[in-house]
Each structure stands twice: as C-alpha cells, then as structure tokens.
Length: 129
Image (cartoon, rainbow, N blue to C red; front, top):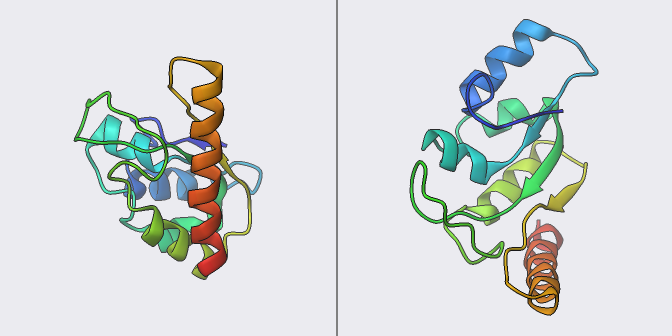
C-alpha cells in the first residue's frame, strides 16, 4: 500500500490518478485521512467512494488544524470526519482493516487508554454503519 503522505498520494484525486496510471491489482492505497489534511490541507472525503476499491488499508489518527498543523489528538477528539468516512467506506464496499496509528500521551498507561478510547470510538462507528 502506498500511504497518503503528500506528493503523488497527497489528495484523493492524485491517488485516483496514480492508481489508474499504475493499474496493478497488487498496489493499493494506505488511506490515512489525517495525513491528507496535514500534508495537503485537502479533504479526505473528496472522491472517497471512487477510491474505496483501491484502498488496501486504513490508518486512523485524528488531526486538528489545517496544513502543517502538528496537532494529532486521540482518534475521535479531533476534526477528521470519521463518522462520514466510516459510513462512506462501508457503503462503498471496504471490508479491510482499520488500525489506530498514533497514541501520543506521555506514559504507557495514558497511551494504552488513548488506544482503548480510539478503539471504542471507531467500533461504535463501524457497528452503526
């Protein structure tokens, strides 16, 4: 999977163009909606339905602010529209993994709690869809 990390995979339209150009079934997108906001200041929802067939993995982390804002709170406590993203992914046929990518608290116990909170938040979204 090629992660959404700026450049050729910085926005949803650029990911679509790259996947079309590569045209290989073993190359997919590692979709990270927070990266799309952070690196490009773009919407992680734009063209998501069209991109879903070539998404091989989803990284869940949250983000606050626009491009280059280094503010990544616990999943569910930021500005990434995970409710709409999860609904769109599921309705568009995505049935792969969603992994929590980041826990940034100071202690092991706090990071463990962040991961539990993120799991609970994401599970609730998946269960309702």
